[in-house]
Length: 220
Image 1 (cartoon, rainbow, N blue to C red):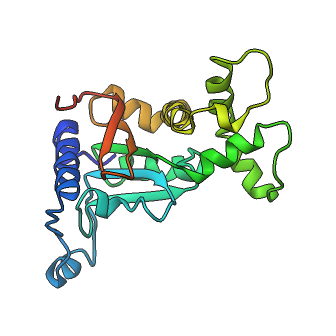
Image 2 (cartoon, helix red, strand yellow; image 1 turned 90 degrees about the vertical axis):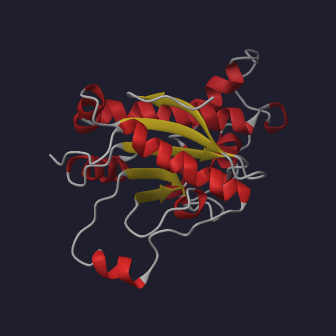
């Protein structure tokens, strides 16, 4: 088991500072030189891991103004905690010694919209592979819908807040990582790891922390 090189709070604070630079348009583009590339040719030691959506507008290294070797990244539609992504996060914790995992949802998420569509009375046709992944988001759709609409289980896309669904799914993704991985849950319990659930705001570039597990706090 690799030990973290920084505290949970230090790892998160570095990411938050990078996102502040991104929002202000003051990118430093750190750790992107030829010397850095050469330095990393035989090892890697990132302090943070990232589970995010594959959306082309949500590139982790840019949002957090990071460079080569800074983030260990896995992305898929709707930042889903399936077997592959959980194993990837376990590797980041146990072998690379990351101190924080960021799970990042975002506004106007196509996967969330597709999951909402699949929960209507007349869902669109999708491929079997896509349907299987969207089924992991649909419980969040149903919880958000049934919180205010008990008359029918079928969702009206015009009457549901897709970003609120995204936040519910974000919370479930974090819970899924904890439920399915003893490596991850033990690291959190021992204070070696924190998990931060965030929602990225496309309009202003802000990575807004929504929830966290572990020994860290957010700046007010």
